[in-house]
Length: 292
Image (cartoon, rainbow, N blue to C red; front, top):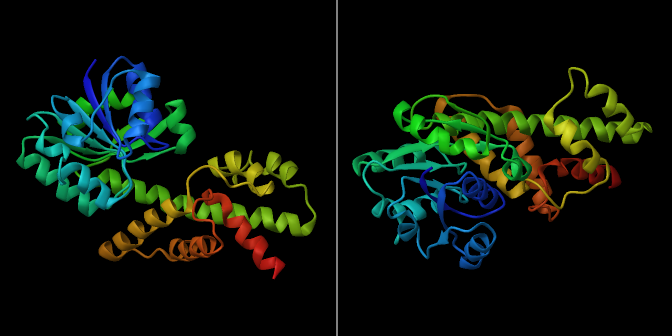
């Protein structure tokens, strides 16, 4: 068992840190809103600290799951940042979805301080975090990954190192690119079925067993048919992620026409007031277009 710090207790981070505590690790948490950290300690034990630095001091592993590039830089290098207090030989594991650029920047800074760094974005959503069944895509030095992997196993269904620093973030971009097209395709199929007078649930029961089947179809078709989106992975977060994907595509010379189009569809959803709706709300956009 290890001494572990977890920075960021949102809908993903709080249950992930909880799995670490249940696995027997000694867990110290930090959250920008201190009340969330206090509530987590009341539920799981361990301790809370007022700054990332105080949380990270003496830890063997420091995990982070925050919002974006700027948030990650702040908890690592800002005033009271974790890097200033981490011991040489400790490993920083970043579960945030950020750019490969900031990952490489922070990995280099960590190395200069004698600290390991593993980029380890996750997929599986809030349910995956709560059930300890996340897919974790990792980049970094093999030796650092090998040390961190048994700790991440507390909330992983699958965890793989896919290359050097930044490879985990590039894999997460591929994940989000694939999801964007899948959700739009599912939204169009269900909307078409509605307009054609079909029973969407009955159809999905059949087609989900064939080549059209996907996680999105299995887990989102019912709520899409019910027009229910007050849960799940928010459109605002998806647009942040797709922005990272599109910027990286420009850097490497990749064409992402469908991703760019779906990003604009999500922009329409935001304009409808759906920034916090689940990403499956693309079907509500189609319904609105029909109602005009």
